[in-house]
Length: 484
Image 1: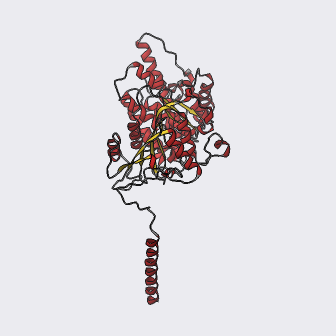
Image 2: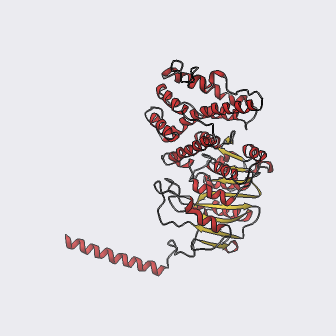
Image 3: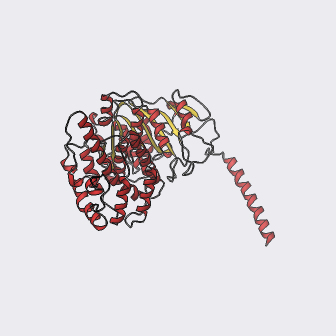
């Protein structure tokens, strides 16, 4: 039912003049979905309080509750079509009453890690883009069909929301930056292997895929005590996100996965000066896929000892700095990071090797990131111990990856198995860091078990090849002249 409801909502938004892409569909579905979620959450809390003989004060005022303005019900529990706003009346109420009301929650909240603060922040960043009040009425009615009461319902909803994020990532524009393939994230989490009590951080949080998957991993890592559950809710997952839409989607995604008040801050991570990061600001684990190919302004670069316009390289410096001593990281980055010869790349590789134990590099095939058109690697490292040996694994598949044929967990099963003991195979090998040249600190992926197609040829070989090409060209010209 949930899947069909989402499809129907997309069909409605597709015909609305204010929504032009999958990104808009997700954004507009999110705020309405959030209000329905809050209504079910309030009902659950009220029921739980009643069971233990306590009173529960609802955080949303009577006029703004879902059952009053969105889908008013008659005494028999059926929808009251006479009271339900629609058309211009509904749009007017949403734009001038709902959004201003929920926006105020941010200033009235006790602290930033409360559900009230998250409500206020979400409605401060969004606006209603649905231009037709009649389309808005249809969407609200569809979302009212959804329930968030049981564990199974919440699990299905989180799964479907992930699917919507994935579709958005495949939709073009800037969608790809919001979606890291979940099989890859799950694999990175497995290798890093967080434990309850770790503080886990993603400074480029996007749709919060890393934090959601780490939550799923930790939930099933042991039989949770009440204390464990509280730690997971309040003191485990932290993120920062610059872009408004990604911030909303990431927050919503975590809420649907079961984190009631996500510790995600809407800020530009790179605007923070590295020199200002203190021990209290550090984390046990960093899991991230920072944006590729961005170009940061000179004033942002001033916050970093290694100056570069490449966004991902600034993020990598941030991640190294913000890790605690002994902290663990799994970071996705462009594979050119391993071999670029510019000063920033060389200095950054030197920093990584000298301040961290870079123990594993996973080389991913092209097409891993649908539509991104870049090859990537995953860096696994621990902070505080100088690297001595690096284990490489090159993911060689017998098919081309893409939208129709995406990466799956089975593709990465051998990597996970071999990585534990850093075993050698046709796809894996190790190098000694002492053998890495200190002129460029080149860490290129060079599988010794596979002929390197990029290996530079000897001059004699090149000249022979040119001669053969010249002869072939001459033969073709003779044939053409003969035909003429």
